[in-house]
Length: 325
Image 1 (cartoon, helix red, strand yellow):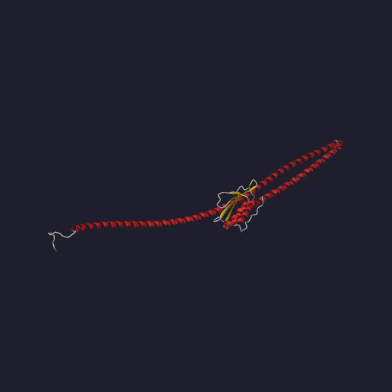
Image 2: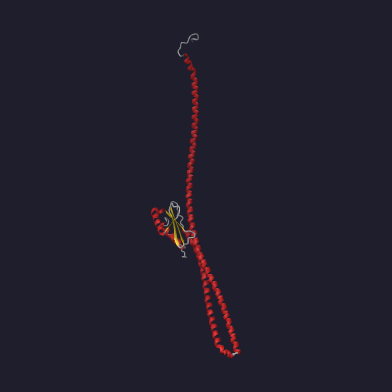
């Protein structure tokens, strides 16, 4: 191996080569560090992206679960609305029956009270007639005693007044007979009124029994299949004020009621029935103080439902037996 330490180095770029040899290792180290930092950064970013993707999937699952629970809640709410609507309709119908039968009960009670008052007055009148008859008997007895006294002591005077006395006696007898006849008539009338009172009490009992039967029929007539779910609801309020019929109408989507005549009501219901067909649900409301008789309220309800309501349009609406008031 040659030793060139004592000779001049004639190679070109000798210093540059030495400088390059010293620079490149440092540059390589720097690039290696940068590459490691970049790789570490990429690893951290990838891990974070994986966590975010997992959280996103969990959030989507939770969102789907919440949407499913919301759909179930909406279905339950719709079912509850249907149940509440049916219960309100049943309650209104039962309240109408109770109010109308209560009015009939009040009429019967007032009639019964009037009959009882009449019987009491007739009994008082009969007592007065009996008192008058007793007075006549007393006066007749006094006349008879007076006649006997005159016969014993004053026969001549008796002859003079015997004719007048006989006339008075006959008149007293006639009045007494008339009063007894009137008393008999009053007693017959009292007996008749007592029988009528008994009949009224029996009628009241029958009406109470009829009310229970009517309520039972009504419960059996309510068909659970009738529902406002998925239907277009039309509300009709029927009452009587100051002797005149009052009809209020609220169509599908209306916020309030509009007064209409019977002809206008039927015209509107005809149009809705032609347009909606099996989706028309008619709700009849009879207010508490409607001023209607039982038959008026029921006949109106039966007529409207049987002609326009989807549930009764091809069915016969049953009618309970009830007397006109």
